Length: 93
Image 1 (cartoon, rainbow, N blue to C red):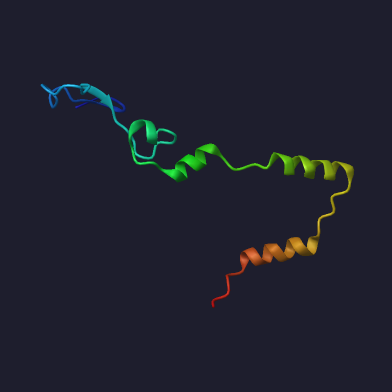
Image 2 (image 1 turned 180 degrees about the vertical axis):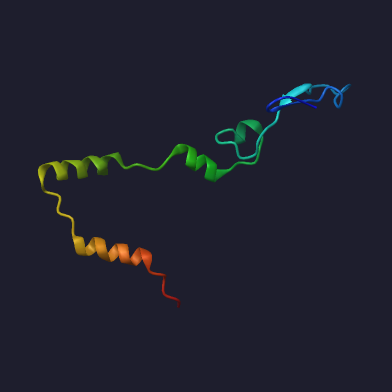
């Protein structure tokens, strides 16, 4: 029988069993940041998503400074070449 969201009343099922709570929360496999603590199977994708993207603060500061000073000169040809390369399928070998 379900008592509340996330808990199950197991008192009828667990009578006479020691060391088990009668009303224990249901663990979700893959819950972000709780895999090791709950004993659930670790989910590295969820853990990476919870941490967020890797940000190179030094490179951002360097680019901001170059833009502010007017010394940042992007190469439109190089940018276009990389954009096209990302959209084209890889050649088969």
